[in-house]
Image (tube, rainbow, N blue to C red; front, top):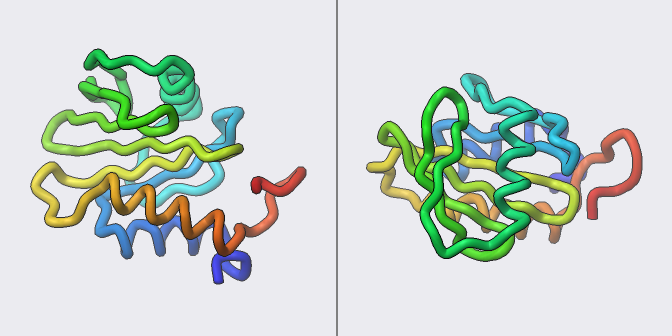
Length: 136
């Protein structure tokens, strides 16, 4: 059960189960909650992702993240997918969290499915407490 795990254990579990290259979780203020090794996404970049999710667009647009320009589009009002340098980024906003997963473009596992399944699991099972109120 996720409630009994630390955020570090949760993010590593997410990375392993989703067969991701890296993963990171931010709160709605852009503060990093947990990340896997090698993740270089910053709080400023997280806020840029959250801003881009505030307006749904049918256009492809660019986001500069982790030293690369990701070509992005919205999947729905809370989810975007981006591609850059052989990597796929999926960012999903759920209440007070921004969950991001990155996989290789040639991955046999869907990064979108991994992120969405992980979010559903977080909601269903609950999460460890952060400083402040509950996330869900």
